[in-house]
Length: 405
Image (tube, rainbow, N blue to C red; front, top):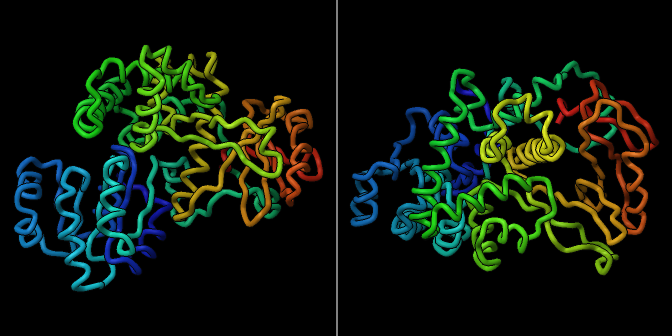
């Protein structure tokens, strides 16, 4: 069953201004389903996952363009970069908006070709898995999260029990898993990892040792929500730091991980430089780290880190879904004072903590005061947690229900 996506409005706006629309995102996040739903019968469809179609696109792109005349949706464009010059020629002849819709699940190879061939002609949007709001059919038109006072003072009946939340976290946000309770979780993710390793990593990224890459993938999943230490991560996966950096960039470009950078203000000398690593699909992270049920995950050592990863993922979905670049950072100084997330919007910093607790207190936001050193306006912040209602516990800090993000 199709669920309306937050990004639909951004797609309509982008397609009305650019001759080419590009949707990027990891495999199985719903790119093709989304665009085919929006296109209806008004747009032809060609998938480069089809060997015959792919062969034609690679060997005779001119004939491909004649056979599949626009308006056209091309799926998995990264497999045939030979098409991009011909798309450029087509839109240069006719700059009518919305002629070509493209999807791609491998940014590390694709984006270089697109930036060279279609500069100024393509509008690019990013799609992640389903947000919880999209899962329940309330994602369309939902704004990006920002903890402003009207939002925090609203009356909202949305709640999540601990059990419901960790079931969502454990199953993840890929539509095939999130919308079908009968889908076998281990079978789905086992197939997903195998496809990812064989189709994308081996063929496109040219990684020779699949087993070593799988170890690296699992090591990353085990460190979701933690500060990135590439030397230790590479050592645990038994690869060199140089290889580890390369593979990390592959995971980031293919939409599986997100690197949250530290915020640099006027105190850069006291800030540490390493990003924090987040797995974007918590279900895949739980599978790779071998948590066999939502209950064991909730009671286990990764419980807090994977909750934080889920919160960040939900916030990212809201910002990407509105066609916005997420202005997300974290704060941590050499005195070990840390804030999980800073949203820096229009010169104002909004501090947020993620805590697996139903009873946050002032101690959870004690580090917010260090932001005065940044010499910039500090907006409302708070603790995203398991509480059932938003309540202030300082003038500028609230408890924020996880169900609201």
